[in-house]
Image: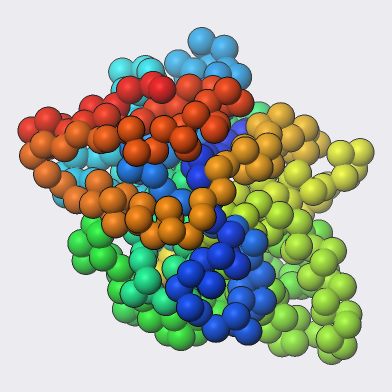
Amino acid sequence: MSEQTVGIEAIGAYCGVASITVRELFQGRGLDETRRGNLMMRQRSVQMPWEDPVTNAVNAARPVLDRLSPAERDSIGLLITATESGLDYSKSIASYVHKYLGLSRHCRTLEVKQACYGATGALQLATGYLAAGQDPGAKALIIATDVNPMDEHAKYAEPTTGHGAVAVLVGEQPDILVMDRGAYGAYAFEVMDTARPTPDFDLYNADLSLLSYLECLDEAFDAYARRVGPGVSFVDSFDYLAMHTPFAGLVRGAHRKMMRQFTKYSPEEIGADFERRVAGSLVYMQDTGNLCSGSLYLALAGLAAAADPGDTERTRVGLFSYGSGCCSEFYSGVLGPRAHARITEMDISGALERRRQLPFAEYADLVPISRDSLVPRRKHHVDFSAWERTIASTSSSRPPLLVLERVEEYHRAYAWR
């Protein structure tokens, strides 16, 4: 197999059926409005009581699989769910996802956890597995899926949190991104910047997380440059940049920090470079919030959507993945000539626009109910009646969605609705 034949074939995303504007959330929580602009966010996705990491994963991946032939679907030999919102200490949510996607019973399934880095680790493992050629023609499906149960106690972190999943199909026809094999730099160390000790409780040290993110970007890029060799330039080696996006303002700050470190550009020149190489990656992120390890791949989808559909030249993307705790990686790849078309056909923008926008009072009532649905229990039944308005407002403009209906003896039961 030649070197640039493995990469991302397709990307699907699910960002829920409801949202709230960041402005309304700031006003409802009584947060300092002068800080809102620093986030560079417009809306965030909101979890409903029938949504969890399983439903998010299946609803993100189904549109990707629906475009495959039966033979292509059966060629998926590896399914990895990446999540920090696992529902069991032993049973992988990949088992549920495998069932409801109807994948082959000869498919390997597993779950990985490394905060917001997990999907990137899984992607690199899958790329190596496919490139080894032991299973010719095989594909891998990586699904980053999470919920963010933060409430008013998270203060300014609450408006940045998102909810949803991103499905990444990996194979030998990389229409989205051809991986630069062997071109990466990793950097990891132990730090308590964020954690989730229980399913409905988050710890978040915003300042420490920011410092860890910036340190990892610096060190991971340095490791990338040393591995790839002389001539690597943060400015000149990449036509576009996509980064893990806890919120868009952090990406802008990280880009500015690196440009000041490696160039003598004026503030105006740095701003122009940001608009040219980075801003496209934020087109979806500014309306969803942090999707954890899915955020980098939703950013990549944004870049592909914003790219010139007539540009068939080699367009290299530098990608930075960060996961609290922490592990990070800087790697690169080349956009495929059909990247724009493949992303556009998924209609991510349309799905975001069709979400029902919640007033703050309804959002505030919803948060504790949705949080409670994540706690393992012997029996649980979802009451859909209180949220029929949200279901009805989107049902006519979308395909059927997988929803959580009940839990019996800790076994979660789902249905299409």
